[in-house]
Length: 265
Image (cartoon, rainbow, N blue to C red; front, side, top):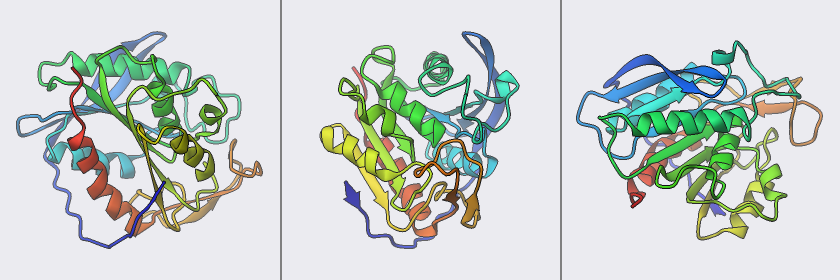
């Protein structure tokens, strides 16, 4: 576990990406995705970015896409729900598209597609995601889940760690960064803390003091969400919204962590 001192620093994101919609064969679906390529020569690693239970979230997606492509990384954002005609799944308990099921299949297909692109630098990709997408990152990070040599590292923002922590046989197959709001009452930090304590050499957990779910979304005031399918105390109620200090830290530190990952051989 790492508690971080948070300093407010100005972040400027310049849009340099050329974005386009692409379609990727992925098992039962033609997976639609937003694909952004830097205007400058790409640098490693290319990144697959996975949405949360609400589906694509333009405010968050554009922010991270533009930040990462400005740093030179190609970014692919697949839409697992919209590609199947589904809307938000945040209030749906019986989900037919789950992190360990079809979302994992989508992630593998998206990663293979991105790795095969001529503009993608060699040495492995990064898979990152938020909330339900963060849980999909944990599924992808499971030892043996991804094809060998395809991924160099994983980043999960406020994932649900409970089901993975309950598995005595679960282990991460690569370096994994988990970033959580310490006050998150939607996907609580405690199971992620326990998971990180089990694998201190492969999991880095950063806790953002005072932050809730969606803390990195810009201009998104903290509000109470109700009727959610899964929350920390099971009552369907949780907070979500911006923590500016945590957001600023993440926009600086996460790209630096990604850039420092060694390539797979």
